Image 1 (cartoon, rainbow, N blue to C red):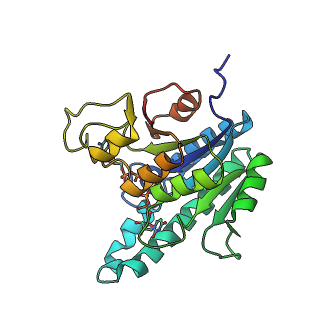
Image 2: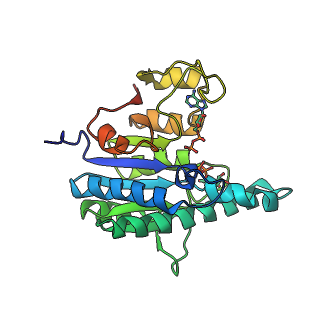
Amino acid sequence: MPASPAYKRVLLKVSGEALMGEGTFGVDMGVLDRIAGEVAAAARSGVEMAIVVGGGNIFRGVAGAARGMDRATADGMGMLATVMNAVALASAIEQAGAPARALSAIAMEAICGTLTRQRGLDLLAAGTVVVCAAGTGNPFFTTDTAAALRAAELGCDVILKGTQVDGVYDADPKVYPDARRFETLTFADALVRDLKIMDTAAFALARDNDIPIVVFDIHNPGALADVLTGAGRATLVSG
Ligand SMILES: Nc1ncnc2c1ncn2[C@@H]1O[C@H](COP(=O)(O)OP(=O)(O)O)[C@@H](O)[C@H]1O
Ligand SMILES: O=c1ccn([C@@H]2O[C@H](COP(=O)(O)OP(=O)(O)O)[C@@H](O)[C@H]2O)c(=O)[nH]1
């Protein structure tokens, strides 16, 4: 019998890069469908799921156009990229058999709903997966910070950061192959050691609201189900 979920309501961060698969730009439909299938299975098992999706897979492709632009304008393009990913992910989750809605922090009603806290809470309580788009809705932020913000306002028990590595290391493992992985870590350590797996604002917001972060490799099939049981190969940042 599968182990029961350790959490009632979770915030899953899906990076834009995760959706790119082996490609260099855009969305790999095979990867999108696999992640959507795992999310739908978790939702059907009774876990309430909010998702914050990144945009690096699309935004990187238009970075040339953004060169020379002021930061706030370029960040607007980045946020639009997250909306494309969110709409694609919500649609794929629905196709995989769980109700899902994309809600954007920046109103664009012809494309998807607008995110308000109450709308998000109502949908989660009804068992609908809420895919949050457009980050915080403000430039100068990241979708990691948006993940911490949405987790706090939507009352999530944990932030699951699905990324390209299987946890937090004492240095970037892609640069230092002999870096050592932490099983657990305190927020204070993550901040003092400047471990760049998430930005400082995201770590600080999660710490101040007492929401633990689990960093895991979203490319590993089945990893989401494992971390949802409180097990699996991952790093827990808390305290
Ligand atoms: N201390 C660290 N531990 C783990 N990964 C790290 C660390 N420092 C930097 N990284 C890098 O951070 C990357 C993930 O961060 P980022 O690209 O911002 O995530 P995402 O796009 O998933 O939000 C990993 O691919 C890894 O190479
Ligand atoms: O609250 C936010 C979240 C994101 N962004 C912009 O959207 C881009 C994509 O987000 P992110 O880099 O966090 O995506 P990921 O790395 O997870 O794919 C960022 O580079 C920013 O330009 C923003 O301006 N405000």
